[in-house]
Amino acid sequence: MTEISVTTLGLRKMALKLRTIAPELYRQMRTSMRETGELVAVEARAHASPAVSKTIRVYPTATSVSVKAGVGERAPHKGEAKAKENAGKGGTFRHPVYGNHDVWADQPANPVLHKALEAKAEEVALKMSEGVDVVNDRLLSGEYGP
Image (cartoon, rainbow, N blue to C red; front, side, top):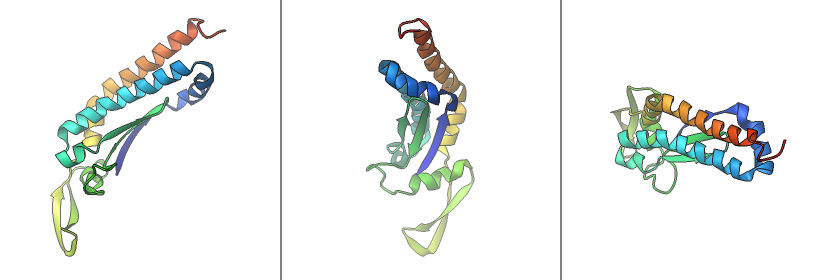
């Protein structure tokens, strides 16, 4: 499995308080994080092989989002996404041919998660900022007390 995470650590305390004083705002932040992760996931799916594409998932919390490839029941070869991602580097990776460890092959890497995050970095930052701003504005409106 390969994973890329974007975390906003400064929001952790606020999110914990939101969970108790304004649960709907907490859910709104989580939804915003999911939407942010989907920006990267859609881009990654567009450039991944069909086998890897259907295993790309988004896992949000109120303060972070992870996009993972090679997870779930749809992953026909559990290590395929990790191998093709090649730790975010291009080049090639080696693997046994049909599990035969006497015969090895080189295959081009395709680090789709890293490329997707690079391609969508500005949009991700803007989307996360907008999500935090919306919650901040509602908190400052006085709707939830002093």
